[in-house]
Length: 294
Image 1 (cartoon, rainbow, N blue to C red):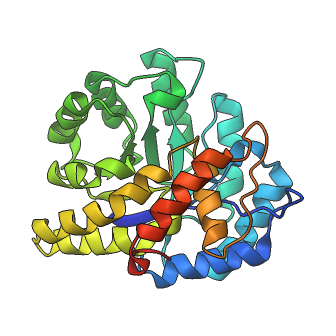
Image 2 (cartoon, helix red, strand yellow):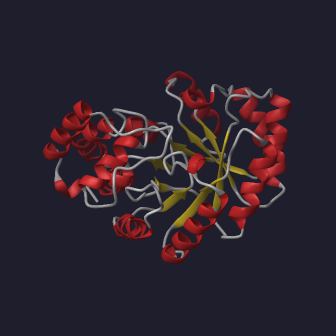
Image 3 (cartoon, rainbow, N blue to C red):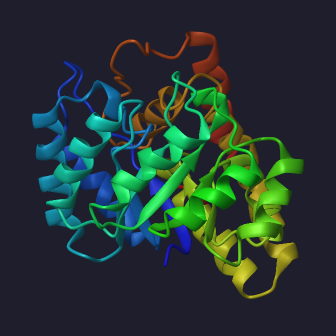
């Protein structure tokens, strides 16, 4: 169901901090024409936590109209409050996405019974669920045994976006579950490793800038050409790493501005990229092959 390259889309802002719908249109078209398989709207990279309900709805209306079913769409709806998550999911379903991305609740550190009920209630709304596991941001590490219970009791969970850097547990999870659900890489800098443990694709923030590179990597892997996959990855790797020089999506938006898509503006509590880091990113961008960029 969820295979290939999905871009976790950034939300372009004007220099005044309003949604830049003209830049959004440009970014969406560049993404779709690059050959991606899908888009994730209102995820972490979209700075969804800083958007109010009216802004979210306006963005979804504009984006869904332009996308027009040319690629799959997943909408982020997760929060650390089950009631709010359900409200977000109900609002998202009005736009008929292919699925919803629901992060494991952050800060609260829910116990297994609470976590299962959180996803069970979301499942009752009917949309396929992509469970988002990112312990570095949420403070919650999901043991494989709990994931097994979740998948048994909430069959509406069709995929996992895995953003853990504990490759021992990641591998254990992939071996146990990647033939039962779609297992999506959430770590851009480990994409080949995830493919080698049966990942079905990737949800990528760096693909805002490097969508052609990720599309070529995935296509080469599907063709059985692992050497070509790694060659493309190695060429893109310095810029992939540069996207995370500071907290995502600050560097992604700075790079997008250099590529002629919107401004580098982010919303507080995120701030602009430091001048020293901009100089580092500028040099890496200059050394990156242009055919890997949007």
